[in-house]
Length: 384
Image 1: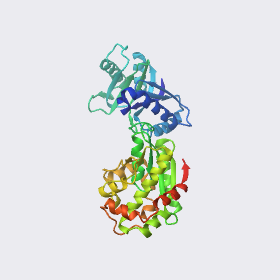
Image 2: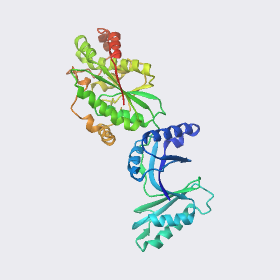
Image 3: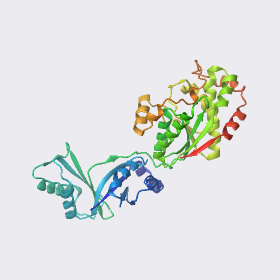
């Protein structure tokens, strides 16, 4: 017997004629995730197998694979040549527990004459024989499930547990997106959700030094680093927004400050997206959460750009967002007390139902093209 890690994919199975593209991309992403570790990878039908690794690397391999989108579940398993007598001996050797159990057999290799149920009975009887009364078969209320996967490649895989994977689609299968990464709780979760649907992301952050601190930029870099563990690499763009906010504060009505600010952000995101060939802009906006996220405000923001704007969290409950942030490890960084540019010059009574014609009229006081050009020319690029 030899140990290996069995990888199952989920949604890719439904891709029909395009499945080979998704399978190839998933395999590439697995190799990227395991960079620096010695291993081999093989496949059989809808399975991948990572093997020939050092025993002390096993936990690290599992932890990395759990973050690879497209993987439905993992199992640490024992691999042996398909032979019922050898399988019987292996099961009796590695399973040394007491309690209620069942044996589940998947017989993909139809050259094996016995049915799946007959093989399960055969193995279960063998375990009962060697258990000394410490085991009992229970098909429904069991403590342990012994899984036997007999594959078409002439190998059989024996395992007990299924470790949940990240699910979704392989990163890179759904184009490229530009995430507006603010530093709060929501936007990293939005980036995670876009990654889960197969979109490769880069991130754009607006800062307003000296009103926002260097530590605020470092916080955003830390969030991008955390997202990087799900995508392999990420490019982070920093745009200085200070002069734009000062101009809006000086020349535009207070109630439209946030709306105009968001519209200019979207225009800058579009300019960057065209230059870098991003397919969509991703935001952490959540319907009704703040003044800039009402239906009227969102419509006003959208009208400033021709880009596709993805809002993965638009109908999430705040608790759902926080729970996801905790799950993916971004929450503790997001709540660090270093404010982003959205808190600078914050009006007391922002308009929650801005009319587009009024917003456009207010914007005429600004030389928007010049402000955007200056911001774009000063972009700082960080590759993680």
